Length: 183
Image (cartoon, rainbow, N blue to C red):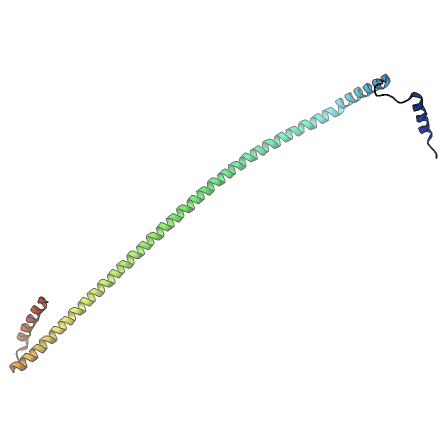
């Protein structure tokens, strides 16, 4: 086993002085620790601190800018959402209004169609009544003529001679008319 020489030398020195106690003060170590600390502090203050401070300030500005931008965008988003709500409510009202107008127009059209249909029905019924009345009047007149002819034929047979057609016809028609008025 070959143990390096410097390891043996370090072990020998350690054995001579013994182990250092944590409560033991070594002024040489204390002095050089402060010297290194102060030199390192000034080097860092001179070269590293401004760069670190600048980067930190830049980051703070960037974060502040991003926060203000986020707040602005959030406010814009809220405004857009509110505008969309208003537009949606307006669209709903317009749709409801249009639906009501369409219902009213349909109802009005239905009423007009019903009125036209009723009017047409009344006209058809009135025309049918007039036709029935005219047909009835023609039938009655025809029946009267036939009745007059039959009456004259029967009377002429009874009397045995033929009466004058014009005078006899007037007599029978007035008699039938008086009968028709009684009924």
